[in-house]
Amino acid sequence: MSASPASARSHHWLWPLLLLLGAVTITVAWIMLALASGRQSGWMALVAALESAWMLRLGGLRRRGARIAVAMAATAAVVVAANWGIASAYIGGAMGLDLWSSLLKMGPYYAWTLSALANTPLDLLWVPVALVVAAFAAR
Image (cartoon, rainbow, N blue to C red; front, side, top):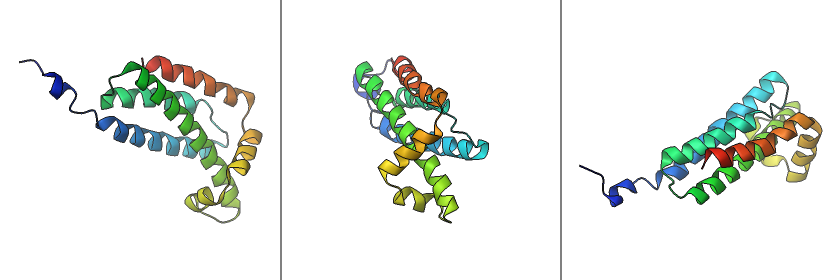
């Protein structure tokens, strides 16, 4: 018995939850890896791109154009959140704050300045590569 079109679309609400779960998980993993290694680990942007595309497919987002746009936006959001978290952890740790407190206290300009100082050209190169990978993987 074949699935009706209504039952094939019954799980369309699942993709935002899976995307949020994947984005939070990869952001935390990226922050922890960067803190443990002492480097920015810009290559994790590729992992974020692949995970975003995979979560959208797994969640059942069917429209190809929307899936590509959402995967690219999620990848960019994870890159920003991870860099903000890494900068916050370093500065907040020096001031005796936990990660959550320092995340909320750090402003966008300070986070941008610290990320610009910490990222190498190779780390910055991974971001556009990851966006292209997200678009390709989400097709």
